[in-house]
Amino acid sequence: MAKARSAPDIWMLSAIGLILAIGLIMVYSASAVLAFHEHGDRFYFVKRQALFAGLGIGALIFTMNTHYSTWKRWAPMALIVCFGLLILVLIPGVGDVRGGARSWLGISSFGIQPSEFMKLAMILFLAKWLSEKQQTVTQFTKGLMPPLGLVGLAFGFIMLQPDLGTGAVMLGASLLLIFTAGARMAHLGGLALIGVAGFVGLIIAAPYRLKRITSFLDPWADPLDGGYQIIQSLLAIGPGGLVGLGLGMSRQKYSYLPEPQTDFIFSIIAEELGFIGGVTLIMLFLVVIWRGLRAAIAAPDTFGSLLAVGITGIVGVQVLINIGVVIGMMPVTGITLPLVSYGGSSLTLLLTSLGILLNISRYSR
Image (cartoon, rainbow, N blue to C red):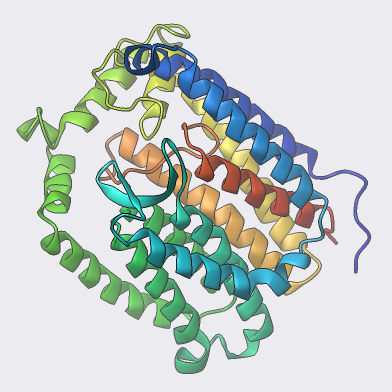
């Protein structure tokens, strides 16, 4: 076992801290009006965000100081438990429906999203599986199909909720990990074609998804329904200009942009802090991704390397999809901006994952 550094990657840790701080400020700024209107307390959402951020920071400190190999032995159990939770959440009366998806387990306004836990559990298991069977990963039947089958099964359960955004992040990060492990491009390319056909099938099976595609292509064709969110998002970003309208000065958060503290918080950031604020946040995410990939390259073993790639992939894919949706480059999928958007289990689980990534960086060669 390589000797740990005296401190974790200071670049990554600093970037995570700055993003989290920006997130807390912007959750308050984006949600104060809505919070006062619905709950009579301007601090309602930010207080809950701070609570989960505190839990997440505690989890980050724990995982940052626990050798990453510890999670290898728990990976199969974690995956089994998460599959059980994904099944449990689909049972009427057990799983809560929020935002049109049966994605939550909990009591009253507090709850967890099993799909968020599945993202980390799947990455842990794939890193373990592929590090132990790396010699067979180039074989389609023995090496590639078993892990892809698990990913496909988990994606299927998540889509039954349905939660396309979380499923897409898990799928994207898992494929990146599998590719890094040495899977053949020809195999992945062939499966990608099948995936496109399946995606088309999902769109046909649910008319609301087709509406999202058509609204993405021409939001102004249906400005009061399918294209409403994208239009309001662009109306927030445009006036922000170079330096923004000023912190707290957003106009779109006054009931124009739905749930501005969650999926479309980047719109409020661009409106209040402008191009400079938006680019600064993106650069901080790029620092996390850069240092995460550096930790993967320098990890002392294959498990650590693949695990670092998978966790970095979760962050990168989620940022790409969220900002792509907000600026109108992707159809609306309903996914939060990591460490920034309001969210309980998603924030806590991501900080836990980043703690593992920071621990891997401490053992670089």
